[in-house]
Image 1 (cartoon, rainbow, N blue to C red):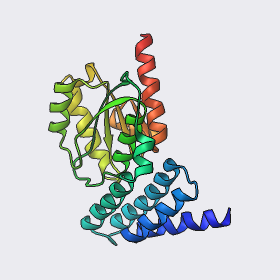
Image 2 (image 1 turned 180 degrees about the vertical axis):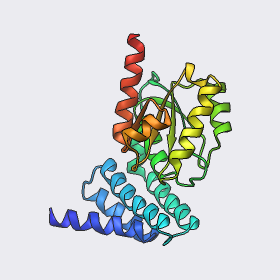
Image 3 (image 1 turned 90 degrees about the vertical axis):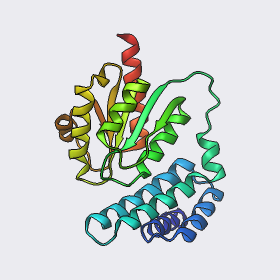
Image 4 (image 1 turned 45 degrees about the vertical axis):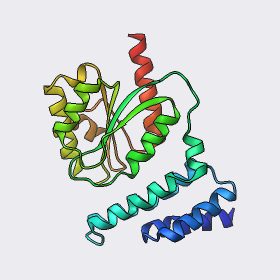
Length: 220
C-alpha cells in the first residue's frame, strides 16, 4: 500500500514538473503493477490540475500548459489505455460534440471525457481547444448532437462558457442538444449562471450524467 501511494505521488509530481520521460516511466510501472488505467488517468489529471494552478499563479506559461497536454496525450496513446477505451459495441449511445472554450489551450479534461464517452458507445466530434462560440454554433447546427460539451480548466472560462451557451440558445442549437460543462472549478451556482443543463467536475461523473440525460429524453 505504501509503495503504491509513493508511486502515485511521484507520478503526480512528475506531471506537475512536466518531466515527460519520468511520467512515462512511472506510468508504465504503475500499469505493470496492476493499476487500473482510469486510476492512472486520474493521477495524471491531478498533476495537470496542478500545472493549471501554477499557470494561474503566473509560475507557468502557455507553453507549459501545452506541454502538459502533450504528456497527457502520450499517456492516452499507451497500449493499455487505448485497449481500455476501445468499445466493441455496435450500437451508438448518442452523439457528443465537445471542445475546450475560447481562451483555454488545455485539452486534458476534454480528452479524458471524450475517451470515456467513446468507451461507453458515444460517437464523438472533437472541436479541439480554444474553440470560439461561433464554431460551437456552426458545428452544433450541422451535426445536431445529443450533447454539447464544453471544457475549461481555468477559472475565467466560466465567462466564455456563458457566452457560448447564449450563442447556442440564440441560434436555436439547443432544440436538439443538452449542454454539459466540465471543469474542476465549476459549481452548481456556475452552472445556473452559465445556463447549461448540467455540470461535472470529474470525467467519470460526466459520463454518468450524459447517459442519464439521454435516458430521460428517451422516456419523454
